[in-house]
Length: 113
Image (cartoon, rainbow, N blue to C red; front, side, top):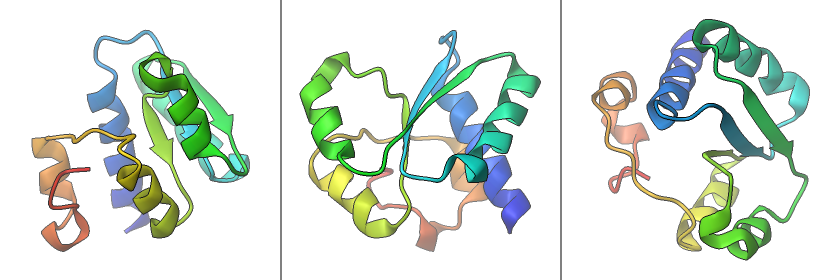
């Protein structure tokens, strides 16, 4: 399961960054938990990953930045925080055959958020 999650996260990063020189992530996750994965992504793709590790205030930060936000991807620590960001209309849907294939339907948002 963990290998599938890592593969899916790497695929998600690759899907969100084909024309980008770097990936910008806002994260509530602890640095030691995700930095190795981001380092591997950079090794495999050559695309640098910049992570803003936040303890709180992601919605406020994204709202204040608006369309100028550099964030390409957000990582939360629980469904409640993820739901709050989606409810605040700060995300956009992603349609991807890779994600559809690798994430079971009962674990995907019906609106592809």
